[in-house]
Length: 216
Image (cartoon, rainbow, N blue to C red; front, top):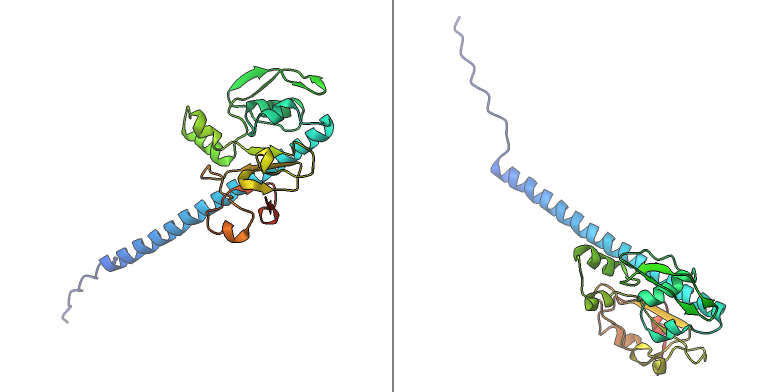
């Protein structure tokens, strides 16, 4: 009987084409995951900014009710710097996280309040806090772009209007308006006309309904 030697089995493996296809699929999935993560992060930051703006507007409204007038510190500024934040801190209107501490003493209509330590950079939106994490010593101009902004009804007629520094001549029915300038650090609203809004990138976070505001 004659025996024939077995032929060696072909080595199992992937062809170059198969490898390229697999790598391509992995690249597509990785790109989709990165895009999804960026979208989720942007949504989370905007949600946090909405909460900050709402809380700040509520705090200023309650402060007005308690004091029966706008304190000098509120009228002296138009952004949530350390002085405005300090007043809200000692008035127990907002619980603000400290960064670099300086000690102040503030006087309100109710009398002199106790000293406090407060973030010298003020109340920053999420994009401002991201800047703080990236830069050890950001400049004042860089930081100020991301402080929450506000305007108040100084003459108590029920509106915040252009004569009181309302942006772009818009008249808003409110005692106080608060906003974040968004990721670009710029005021994007130009007019209360919805058609005009579409001409500009609009990423600001507002405490009021911009479309319902009246133009002066």
